[in-house]
Length: 195
Image (cartoon, rainbow, N blue to C red; front, side, top):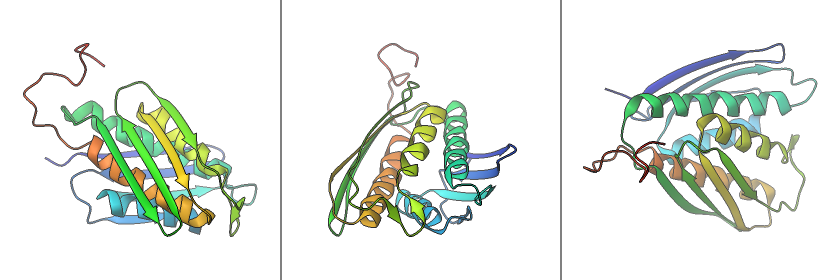
């Protein structure tokens, strides 16, 4: 049985639908109205082997902020629903990915305790029309709603596009590793017996 979640969220600012499939990556179809953000999410899904459909409509004429944050919230909800329903997983995931001049490290702990550690120094504040500071809002929303520890460290990089892309590729790989079903005979994924 495939691990799938579909979540919808509608507010006065945004309308977001996410369908996440952790076991069938044949569908990657992302449309948020923000081309650079779509590109990053597509990279994350492709390199993480995630089936991901995202449809988002937002008040882009005001700012990209609401759409970026709400996509993070809904995607986080989808990851949490799958975790809540699917049983044993590896729990921890780690990836270090280069993109030309940039090298990023992402570590994930699906431990029920949300936390974001994010260290990234971008030489340029925007990529096209996209304010690069909005990426933190996405990562924060994702970590809170998925209830994961998410540690992102950019080791180095010159080009903001390359830095962001290396993060999203590493994020996809780390999420894939963390949510991979566990074959361990040990009951639970915590020494406490419960997360």
